[in-house]
Amino acid sequence: MGYLWFSLSIFLCLSYFSVAEVVTCSGIVPMRYRNDKISITDFGGVGDGVTLNTKAFREAIYRIEHLKRRGGTLLYIPPGVYLTESFNLTSHMTLYLAKGAVIKATQDTRNWPLIAPLPSYGRGRELPGGRYMSFIHGDGIQDVVITGENGTIDGQGGVWWNMWRQRTLQFTRPNLIEFMNSKNIIISNVIFQNSPFWNIHPVYCSNVVVRYVTILAPNDSPNTDGVDPDSSSNVCIEDSYISTGDDLVAVKSGWDEYGIAYGRPSSGITIRRVRGSSPFAGIAIGSETSGGVENVLAEHINLYNMGVGIHIKTNIGRGAFIRNITVSDVYMEKVRRGIKIAGDVGDHPDDKYNQNALPVVKGITLKDVWGVQAQQAGVILGLKNSPFTGICLSNINLHGMTGSRSPPWKCSDISGAAHLVSPLQCSELSSAQRASTCSNYS
Image (cartoon, rainbow, N blue to C red):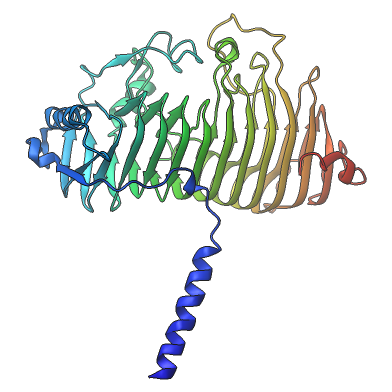
């Protein structure tokens, strides 16, 4: 018995230290316990996959908003399929999906609400004018949790994808989840699937945690980005699996002259222990970066069957800056291109953008990146009148596919340094100058 207790003590001690060693940013927003709990069934919710539950969701959230229970309220979604139109969340609430619970968007798009374009975009991202409200929406709220036992939020995006393909859209498609002008948000332990457009979009937000989520969409579904922090600060994205038709994570901050005028950067973004696949990028910055993007850390990333592993993208007319970006400990397999940093990517909202608004890109550190079956190692193309500086590569191994005819690197209008890069880096990145060139950004 003494040996058993000793062994158990050792196990618990090792378990404690192994848990303690997990680095996480999720503590920026503490998980809230809600004493007050209600169920969607209390408001007539029926989880048969046929009954429309819009009235039940809106009444339940109206009750949370107006009764204002101390510490907030948990709205419980029991097992079942709850069909509904879009709805707004409110402050001090938890939306809790039980195991087997599905909140499913209606495919009737005729009455879908329209909202104003984002001021930092000046118009809908796809079309001029307004945009369809996200399926689950929050504006100007705080202390909100979406969590549960890996229940599902299903956007049933097929009808929207087909309208995009057939060019019959009247306005920009809805995101699956969008928080605007909000703070202290947690999204965890939920499956998101089949978003009409971007999946999770915090815009003009602060203190946002996205952790332990699964995001799924077919690889040919248009613009189904996973998580897009946009003109937001202190965002933590961790321990998630994303497989979609577009970038897994894309940090943004507004579009051309509208983003420049709005002037709100994305900063303090951490992306850690994310894995997934996409025909586009794994970790992306941009291309909408007109408010600026700075202080981004992405680490421990695993990517499979990708278009581009790491993609930092901007364009003439974007202005602003992309600076102090660190991406490390990345494994990628079967990628068209391992790394792309370029100043000629992305479209424009209109012809009013300032062609003299050139982005300043500096302090980009990529280290400990390992790739196999990469058709091309990388492309790093700055702008002639605004060269990219402080591009620092360290311990990069991107092994090509047999018979690939592409040159391993293509570079222009950049400066920086490289150390232990295979295949050998382009000549613009000097091995000798690494210490002096990169010390300011490491």
